[in-house]
Structure formats: C-alpha cells, structure tokens
Image (cartoon, rainbow, N blue to C red; front, side, top):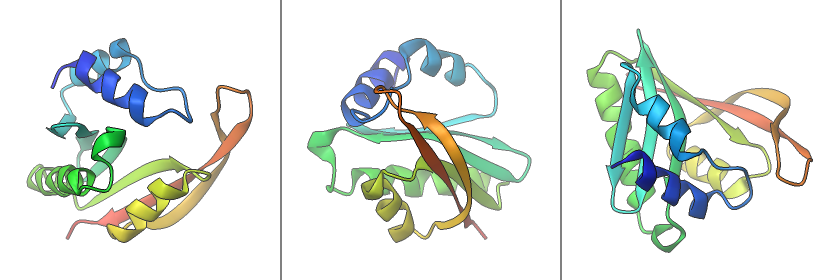
Length: 137
C-alpha cells in the first residue's frame, strides 16, 4: 500500500482528528524499523525497535469497520512484530475515542498510562492520550 493510499484511508477514518499527511506516511515508510500490515481498506503502521513494537497508526475505512478487517491487520502486525523480536507492543489512543479504546481492549490491550492534553483537535480542544500495551509472549 502506498503513502497516498494510507493517507486516503486515514483521512476517511480519522474524521475526528487531524490525520497524517501523505508526506508523513512516506517519511515513516522510509524508516528501516517500520512495519506495515495492510489489507483492502485497513492498515496498521508501526515500528519494531529491539524488543518493543509501537503502533503509530491503525485505520479502517468506515465502510470496512466492524468487518474484522482491523482485527485481522492488527493480528498480522503482532505476529510480524513478534517475528522481529518484539515481546510487547504499545500505542497511544485519544481518550475520547471510545470505539478505538474498546477495540484495543477487546484485542487484549490494557491501559498503562495517560498523557494529559496530548492530542490537539481541529477545533483547538486538547484530548488526553491513553497509553495501552499488550504482551506478545
């Protein structure tokens, strides 16, 4: 999947936040530790450094949400991260994004921290980030 395709899915999926730009995706894809798992209308973009994986972005096209596409690419990301030596994976998610926090909880992630005022919304409000993680072993 190209940076342009990732940006298009993210723009549709992240209506409540400022999505990544095509340039953001292109820059991340060029980094050696990057791990991308994608399927039609869904992707997980992250990185694996030493024994830890980080999810930088997960998006599912609104028309594919609740179809299992997000869960499938997340499971593939976890499998490939484990194959690269990761023993855990972590992510940040907006506290107000209850569908996403529910999704991650259902996939075995647990809240491990909080970053107050981490996200800036398009309307200028600030939203906290929940730190979530999952053991891969």
